[in-house]
Image 1 (cartoon, helix red, strand yellow):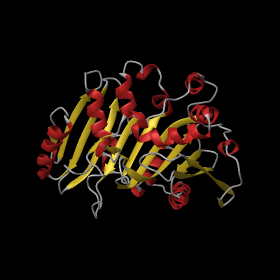
Image 2 (cartoon, one colour; image 1 turned 135 degrees about the horizontal axis):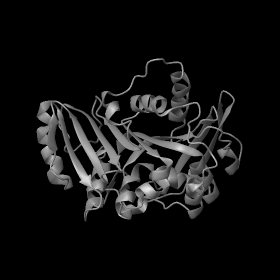
Image 3 (tube, one colour; image 1 turned 90 degrees about the vertical axis):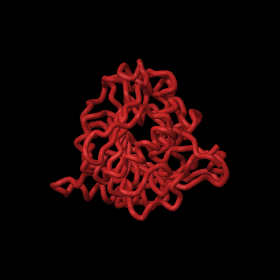
Image 4 (cartoon, one colour; image 1 turned 60 degrees about the vertical axis):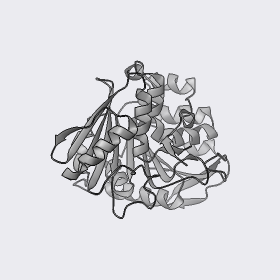
Length: 323
């Protein structure tokens, strides 16, 4: 089996209703109880890979209209599991959820190959930050009683159908906390612990954020990969085949102004070899030495073949496919 960038088929197109609702201005664009800093602090600490996107980038708006559709689909890959999960519940649930959202986080860990072919497997957790004043009740779209509770908040479940990479299907769990965030995960334990930590984070006066935070929070779309010890059992599935010892982090931001995806590899000076390997194996524009221990490259989204480079970048964050 060979690991490739994840195929376009893993992204499920959003219904027209979702786009129309997101273009409306009935809800304020202010977040509820939780903020980007709050959620980023928790997810970057608990997971290997964390992505953030504005709701508008996920559904499409004037800012993304000039980005080629295949490149835009590649950028959205970290959120494909979420959109698939919402689509199973129904188009109305998808549209209303994104209409009430201001930002969406996707986090993953424990990357491993599929039983045969298909997408890399992982434990994931999505956090949908709701706009102030949202009255969304996602559980009403699901049949059956809650499987559990966290305090007074019900945890509901549903199932994704089987796929080539997940022949047994996938059980999903959802909880809404503080009328400000919806959490969806394929792990009940991760859902509970992430919800606990989000609630506890409100009591923290000094956020514990990655050192690279000041390079991320100015963008509406970013990704952060922490290279943790011990290293993953399967480095290929984790997107680390070309990442040498001493790597600390990998970041990606979508620069809507320049229409580029900007990658940064961060660690010790010996990482120059890894940067060279990435250029050759993934077809990226050459990595340049930015500062001590930092190498970077920019992927132009309008250039022919840029979608393949973006797919390659997403595979480095754990979103690859075995073909």
